[in-house]
Image (cartoon, rainbow, N blue to C red):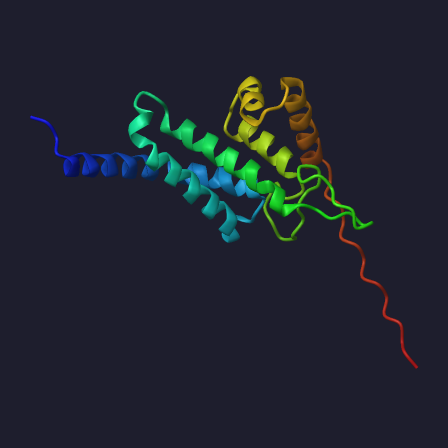
Length: 175
C-alpha cells in the first residue's frame, strides 16, 4: 500500500523538524560568525539561516542519501557570499572598496567582526566547520593556495591586538 500524499508530507515535515532540532544551533552559530554580529543581536544571521533552511526544506526529497547538514551549510555560505556585497566599506577618499576587501565595522559586534566577509567565510568553513581547503576553494570559487592565504591572514588578524579606539578630541572652550 502506497503512502498518501498527505502522509508523505507529514513524514517529510517530521524528518525535517528532527533535522532542524539537531542542527539549528550549530548552523545559527556558524551564521552568526559569518555575519560578524554579536550572538545576542544576530538578526542578519537568523535571516540567513532561515533562508538556507527554507531552501533545504524545498529540496528535502531530492537529498536522499546526501547529508542535509552539508547541503544547508553550503547554502548558508553561498547566500552569505552573495549578500556580502551589500555591506561594503567606503574608503576615506570616497571611493568604493571591493566588497570582499574591507571589514564591516559596526562596533559591539561578534568575535570575527574585525575580518572582511571573505576572511570570515573562509575561517568559518575551514576552522569552525572543518571543511577541507580543497572543498572550501571549490565552494567559493578560489584557488586552494588563495584559501590557505586568506585563512592564515584571518588567523593572524585575530591573534593580533585589536586597534584601540581613537581618543576623543579635547574640548575647546569657546569665548
